[in-house]
Image (cartoon, rainbow, N blue to C red; front, top):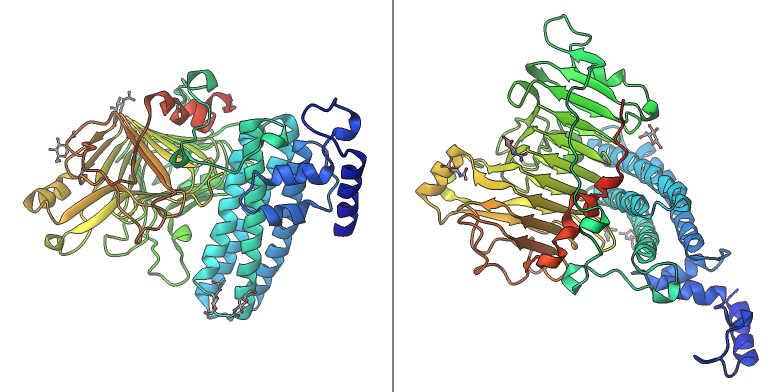
Length: 536
Ligand SMILES: *[C@@H]1O[C@H](CO)[C@@H](O)[C@H](O)[C@H]1NC(C)=O
Ligand SMILES: *[C@@H]1O[C@H](CO)[C@@H](O)[C@H](O)[C@H]1NC(C)=O
Ligand SMILES: *[C@@H]1O[C@H](CO)[C@@H](O)[C@H](O)[C@H]1NC(C)=O
Ligand SMILES: *[C@@H]1O[C@H](CO)[C@@H](O)[C@H](O)[C@H]1NC(C)=O
Ligand SMILES: *[C@@H]1O[C@H](CO)[C@@H](O)[C@H](O)[C@H]1NC(C)=O
């Protein structure tokens, strides 16, 4: 193969010794397919792997090259799935941690396959933005699988699977980078460049004209399909029982569950096949779904601890409190985990301590929500916008006089081509009354930061927010030494309140330029103007 292409290239050179810029165009001047692949792979972070993996595919236009790259990713994904199945099968019964890691891994890879398959179907329809969002998630899930295994890497088989996953991640990153280049630069592969971020001074086009000013929300006057309440008189007594009756894949129809006032002690899971589920409560603090799973329990990882864990697309909720009551010393304990693309969550309250809100992947909109926690309590690798939300730090430890460092957010973008980030618009960042009493008694030891980089390309912006006095002048906190400090993007613009002064900020934080702020609108950042909200 290599010899043939070398021959082919020298033949071209031989036939066109003078081919140059001013040479009249002829059919023979069209770039050879290996030239096109070479050009397309310049859009990626792993160029050699890109070229070698695409060499055996017939290549035509840009979209076909991207489809080939997705095929490479899909084939390797299948291989990875069977490797992880083998890990599960060979795990001793008592090794709960390994069994959980393998099971989570299998779920992540399955979801990854689903999102990549959807991308393959969407690209010929011209849905590049959807494709980028879905493959961003597909890539995140492959990394999650790797990450799950990392905690239980004690056999050769696991080590080998991790190496295999590493390469899979690179294949998928390549496909995503090419999709990005196609979207940003167009179908001329010669113009494609490797992904750059705001830190490199690069912004995508966005703003009003790119669907900037969009108002989305949970519709009012929805009629319940089923009701849930305690003590009889409703269709179901638990939220999960109601979710279980939602028809799989829903055919684009909405399914409304009205959960009446009451405290529901349960763990709720909404599968990927339960789409357009709407959960309406009677109000924050009235309809309460509560759990206490946490990573201290055998066989649970952060992903598994959610009181309410959600995969199905088009989810909506309003008027709920969802909490995890594991307590301030229980480490990771998620209240709400969301992987629902195009989800809208309004007037909901999320209560926890460490890792309260796991906005894991895909596109999510939170409006007028209340979120409480302390360590990294809004985290994940989704593209999420928080509008008009009240974000409160609550007391963390049993000996508060010792003080603590809290990060409000820990966004986990792993790749510069991922379309993910957290955007806070018109939000309040404050402490609960109880926390502010502690804070005010000894402000020097209670340190609160807007965020820290969970992963290398962490991206978070605060726009038009009230950042109260508990936010330290530095604003942002490192994860570990200088990890991610050159690659993250932490932006601020038009904030107010005692914690908003930019003069003392860390050197690796940024001001969002006024002419770029439209990039972080619901229309541009989440493609909210294109969400097809189920109308019945
Ligand atoms: C895997 O994903 C498919 C959707 O592609 C879904 O129907 C199925 O339930 C998932 N299986 C598991 C084990 O997660
Ligand atoms: C882990 O896998 C890598 C790559 O396959 C290999 O080079 C390394 O020796 C392995 N380590 C162990 C401890 O098995
Ligand atoms: C897995 O653990 C082995 C032994 O500690 C180590 O050599 C290897 O680098 C680890 N593999 C990965 C992929 O981290
Ligand atoms: C903002 O949220 C508060 C409750 O947190 C609500 O009362 C108010 O109406 C919201 N404003 C807008 C503009 O949505
Ligand atoms: C912040 O919290 C403190 C303590 O509860 C409260 O006094 C103050 O009014 C709050 N700030 C805003 C803007 O709500």
